[in-house]
Length: 117
Length: 296
Image (cartoon, rainbow over all chains, first blue to last red; front, side, top):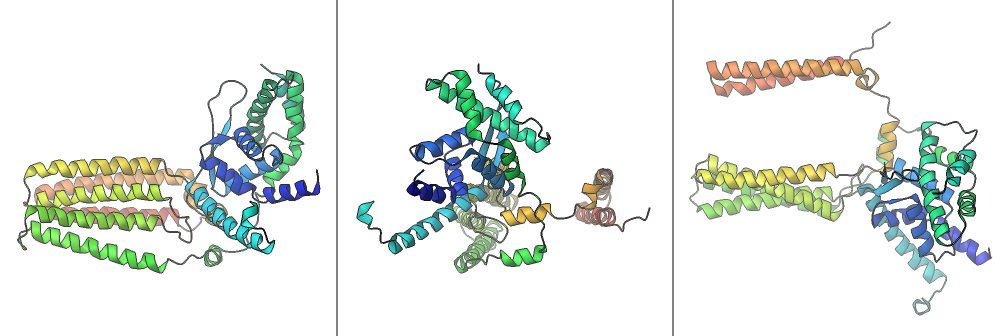
């Protein structure tokens, strides 16, 4: 992993909770679906470790931002689905607002031109 | 079907104490591994190889368990009041003003509607219905607006759900308005149809919203609740059960007394029995929930 990759992975990991909430906003999902959605969005370059994700699910559930329920699959183990709660949606909106504001500050501090994006 | 996954998963969880949490995690991991292995197989990886790779990507399950359980027992030094102070959210001035405006509008609408319906102030039936509609809308806005506000303990409710509560309140309140119009004799009895439609639609909508409601409490409130000492009814379910039976008896007697009062001295005495029953239930609750601990 190059230094660039490490930097990007670090940034991504810092927002795992918000990213997972963002995936669940589109609909209920089980662990592998969430993992795959993140992996596909990053083009497979950076992925958030599964261990990190399991810890995230537990934390989000404890804080009441997601709820979980078991699916009714009969083959290959039952899937544990997660659903975002009203509290989760509110926290997600707040985090996105904070992210947008922070991104603007960092862009201006790092002198990133809009045209480069 | 790929059975290697299950064998490898058992091996990975070997020597780990199977607490309910660990069992839960294992089942969750199992379904995810199967899905990952299926994906690899679809990409052309041989089944055994796929199973091994899926497990390898997972890493050490012990780390997983540690990571997921470390956050659980965090001692709370602060009391509820201190936490509440720290997370305090003041109501927005705009909301306070709006709430006052909605309330005034509701009171005005109800007053005009009743005055009109009672014949004190001669306005046509259409205007009376309009007044109650105005009041019902104001009440609905009050409910919807309040729910979409952030409070110290709750996150704001999403807009469309708050709109659902607005609609349910509006329908219910409008239905009650029609009840008032019919009861005061300003509308023929068939007006009850509108009342019933409104109230029933409101009940259905409220039931749906209530059943599909998800958590709205903030994290600190949830944690504060779990760290609270259990009350007497939680510690002694049999006391709670006893209280339930006492309550049933109290209300049974109350309704019997109401019936007797209605048939002997008149129906206007019925509320007295109701208040009496409620008072007795509260005394029993205080006695049973907060009684001094017995020395044993």
